[in-house]
Image 1 (tube, rainbow, N blue to C red):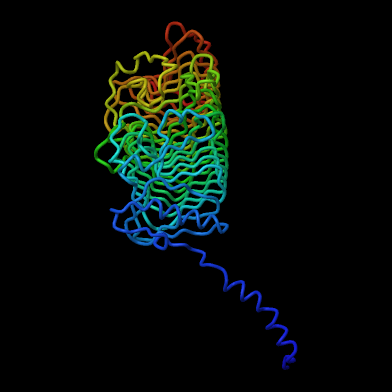
Image 2: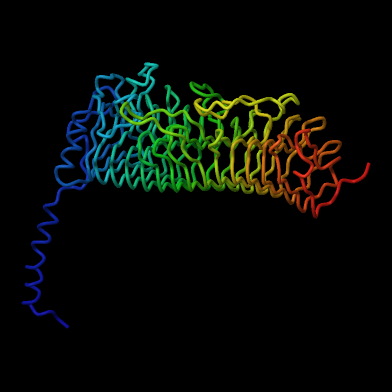
Length: 537
């Protein structure tokens, strides 16, 4: 059926304004070339790039394109609803001259006021910030030789921004931290390759007091901490997911802390791998790397609701480091001195660590302030070994106010896991072993209350200390264990307050005796039931 001519004419007339409107719209992408930027990495293009960003913002937003080539610039101030898009073959290169980085002091006060105020890319109180593409941003960080925090620019620094996306890029060679997102909401960081090994404080990414954050598919190799959640002021880091990342560092690969004033809540980490850095030279830390997973509250604040699952760790000094301390550092001169914080409700599951160093992993609070509600489930820890029998009895200082680091206590009395000042600790199917003989305990619990051990598999070296030591520990249930400790006891009990130790459903056929009790421990402190007894010799 034919359309009447009048209706056809009406349709054409009706669409003309629409077609005219579409034709009148400018290209959605502005190129920095059109604003006078020159490639080659020799001509400073800051003014041209900033003009493109400002023009894009002036028309309500859009995309500023960075075509292939090397483009030299200083600080670029980002704008709302403006995306920076770096094409494949593009390198945005930071100027080596500090004068090209004007200071930017954010409105929110935090401990980072003591650090650098310069950045290559900076934005505050923005919405819809996007930095994406297949290109590279190079901070030229080796050009900034100051050993202090000042005068070494960050690469990316965003304050109080909303709906942030940083995707696909290679980020390298910052003068300071690579990325600092502070007090931001709804942040997505995806598919980044980060290499940061040219200066001090070369973190990979720092999420600071942010809410609703998603980090996925990133490969980060840094001299300082690789992926770090912080709270350098009185706002929590909250509702954060981290998945499918490869993390390497000369310091800590995955870390929450050190700054903890606001604390951390509802953090989920899944399907990640951790390994020693590929960079041979270490500026901070060590070639091997300090810790795989570090959870720290030392400046007040609270940590609760942390789930870390499916993580493979290879080659670091200590696979796990959990620390509630009392450094009590104020985040600003007029802030109150923080009290001791809280660290509770943490689950570490399906974690396998190989090639770890001699130090050992630890979970520690301070007297009167225990770590609470930590569960290790299906965790396998393999260390290099080499500990001496004397190390098993070595006293460990409290160091309540010390900077938290996995090596802060020196060589621990246990090669596998050292736990002190902890309440409601569960070890379920935990394996500890070494590649060379180690004469320390496998697991030590001191001042631990309500401890459940289920299916502990702890390697014993001939002539070594008992696999498990409990000191001043109360309310313990040990079950499902099949220790192989020929010629020695499985368990050592110490301390006058050690009590209510129940061994249920264990197989002790391969031990010389079940337990040794120090003089101050009552025989009523230990009960053994439904277990297979040691074979008579």
